[in-house]
Image 1 (cartoon, rainbow, N blue to C red):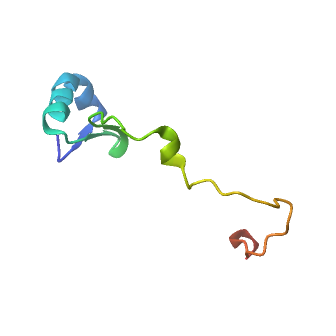
Image 2 (image 1 turned 60 degrees about the vertical axis):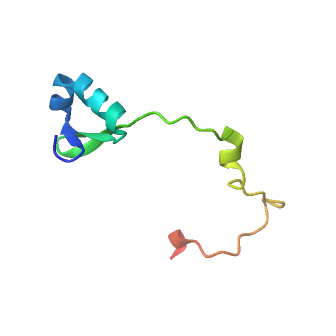
Length: 77
């Protein structure tokens, strides 16, 4: 394992060892496919926040969705 990265083939052969390492250290392990990150194995952390609290403030309300948009669009440039 180089740093926190491991190839898929090495992960497959030693999966339990990597799971134990993640559990003991709390560090994540990145599984690579042909040198590119494909998966992340990390410790489970229970979210104490309610799922709706996570979304609160992220939804925009449009009072008139049919009104023209006065913002220049990047695609129109």
